[in-house]
Length: 173
Picture 1: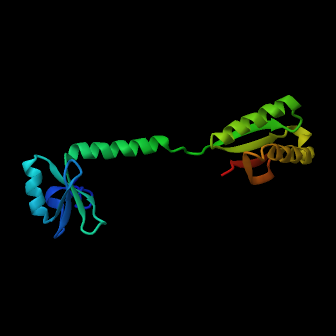
Picture 2: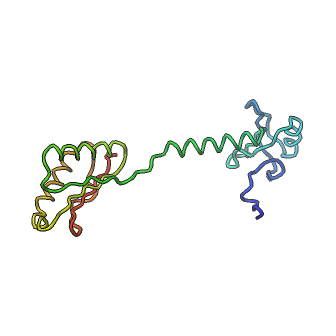
Picture 3: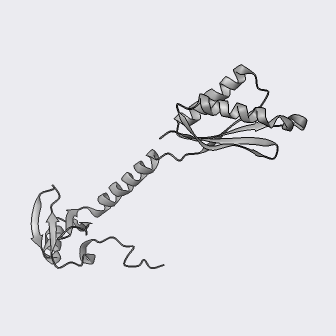
């Protein structure tokens, strides 16, 4: 499969500007010249002429080892990808008849998830005839939202879906 002209980087003969600003390997400026002149200098040093910025006027090119330059660029991209955090949705499940200590454990779990940048889905499940007491589950979820007010903002108020009542909390900005 042949690469198009757009996919390939602008190095050496692919630089198509009448005049370019040339920067040497040590960062010193060699001045504004034609790309052909800069190519001669780069060849003498057995390096490549690489277009660094085409937005500048005149465009900036640098005399460097292209393989090393490409490796450095890829390394920067990998580092940036490593540092970014994708926010997941973590779930905290309970029943509306939960004991005080167990409730506190759930609140602490949710707080830990929110502090690490994840969203929290708080779920109260009903079994059998418990569904008649959905108002108690709603009160429990509202209490949880109030307890986590310092670290979370309510994204979706408690709402019933079948045999569950769910509520979404997002970390505060």
